[in-house]
Image (cartoon, rainbow, N blue to C red; front, side):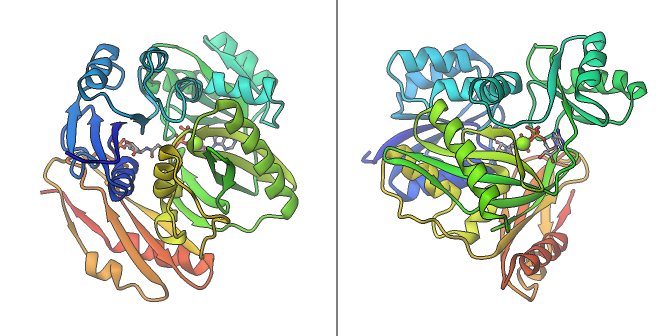
Length: 388
Ligand SMILES: Nc1ncnc2c1ncn2[C@@H]1O[C@H](COP(=O)(O)OP(=O)(O)OP(=O)(O)O)[C@@H](O)[C@H]1O
Ligand SMILES: NCC(=O)N[C@@H]1O[C@H](COP(=O)([O-])[O-])[C@@H](O)[C@H]1O
Ligand SMILES: [Mg+2]
């Protein structure tokens, strides 16, 4: 078979599905991997492998079987020690094995950002017992946020108003953490004016930025995003400066979703993904090259025309509300017909649902971001999931 590059995708959800489309358009052969069969990206890829990304032996076996040009992580929870070994053996891990290792652990990326690079962050402390949680809260102050050091999409995260709630928050974090490190970050609750994702592309020729994306989260999970979000020149420059510092330290080529809180003129670094970001799905309609196209180009060393611009657009999520394995969708015509903007949909075709699982996203472009947000939200609301 003739192809431009062979990619092993570790994680095959909605972000991997769109990345697979972008990579295949450039002639790549994509092997999609995830812990369950028929995952969104597998449905479009050239080949699939079903195994837990946390299983180092299975991960190594898949790499040795396919011998990819690029190993592209799509989720956070991966046996990253195996990626470090594979990189040392000459395999190319995107953006770098170290980046995947540091960002999988909140404490490691926070230590890098706050202590080594001197970026502004919230006040924080780590805790490995209820006693340490109390000490951490005394340092961070109330309200504070408690999160497992290993988790994503808000899992195990809670906001704590006073000392009486700390035990429940610790128990909740431990019960919902991923991996085997009973460790949490206790951090100051930032009463931000808004929060952003700054998509930052590290290419072989330097660092490029997408216009900033605003987003709104519930339960620590994203509900809607919009681009561009208005920011002062000074705040944007501060965010770009911090993002460049952290991606240059992490190294490699690809897109990063760098998350910041903005309060007045203060820009506070939160965390980052060394891969496309869920809030960045808006770029599927806002930018001429989406975050997935940019990731594919950066990885493959292909040119990216600058500057990257965005027309006012928004995304709104479509969530399931129960467990089911007999899913259907209704209301697509109504959703696509919402007036006031140009609407598009992405239905991820996940084989099963659970409460709050993200099953699709509505995308809209309009005259301004407020209009795009309301069109996207209305369109998302028109899609009805049927549960068989
Ligand atoms: N210290 C904080 N102060 C205020 N809000 C916070 C704080 N930490 C987290 N949040 C809120 O919770 C959201 C999720 O937090 P965070 O990004 O740290 O979690 P996550 O589980 O890694 O999520 P994801 O993997 O989806 O990015 C943030 O986008 C923000 O809205
Ligand atoms: N915030 C990270 C994120 O959005 N990741 C995206 O969600 C998928 C998992 O979804 P699932 O939990 O429904 O399987 C991942 O595979 C990735 O595409
Ligand atoms: Mg986040």
